Image 1 (tube, rainbow, N blue to C red):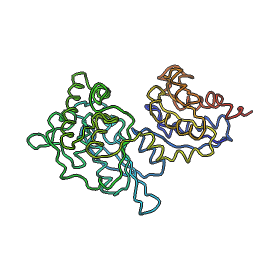
Image 2 (image 1 turned 45 degrees about the horizontal axis):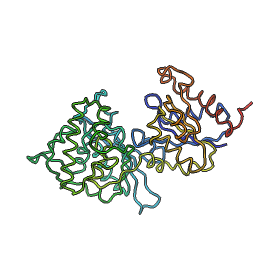
Image 3 (image 1 turned 90 degrees about the vertical axis):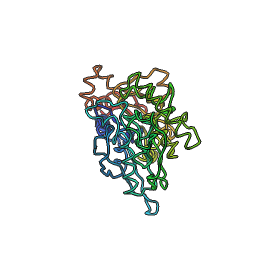
Image 4 (image 1 turned 90 degrees about the horizontal axis):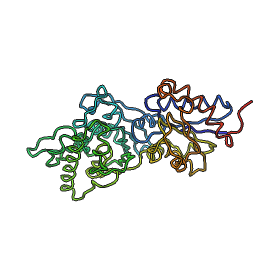
Length: 388
């Protein structure tokens, strides 16, 4: 029997590497003869660099501006393609450069947080590596600045009426009067760029970047209104320059409007983050000859089914006719959602220990028990009886 472990992290308790190690240990407790393979997966947010590194990319350190402007040590991932003429592939992760994880002391900055650090990583990678392809994960952002900070780092400055750069963050959007692209990074035009986007929100309005996501970044109702008005003005300016209005395009509201800047200003493509990552890590090849796939993340809920990493793994495995089970810290699916999820089963640490605090503190131990005592026995039609 061959089992593939294709898991994301358990946020707040275990890294993806640790999750995989504990699942493998649980499998070994059930039956040492089971062959185990593994890949790290992510959905375009934090963890995308780790997935790329595990797939053979090399991390290259770079110092950039964090979400509040303070320098942070980030990285991009690079891999040479099989033939020199094909060039190099680069992976960039917004969460690692200027996402929520980089907020000093975790204190939100809903009006002033900037996406500049993302653009700085992109620019360094473009100039150093001269890549043919670049994948940019934009999940886990801390800002709602319409992508203005990213664009500024790439040489496209948003200017006010006096011709000065607007203030950093969403607070500066209302004063944008024009764009200056005279310092635009030329290498970007020669690179195939895809932004990993796992939401379909528009830029503005009741389902837009400010209304839906800014409260998660610390914005109060008045700030949400201010940010939405700023994004609306920003879209008006860009539409006047480009002649096309893309503010309602699905994904425009991703990462506080970075998705909009990617499409409307850079002309880049948006693609589901999980699809990009699964291609990067070679999931389809890893599925060959497998009898069962175990995937997982910290919480399996309605958001998971809409496009998080475990759901993407389940879809790919289904195309190969391979059953998939999911493990998690918490399970929050209705029977109908579970039936539509594509999982043969979903198992949670809380099945063994109802106290969430204990689940976090003893996540590794509980995960091993969960796999050995619940997951594989629950898939006995695939895995056979427990060893005697």
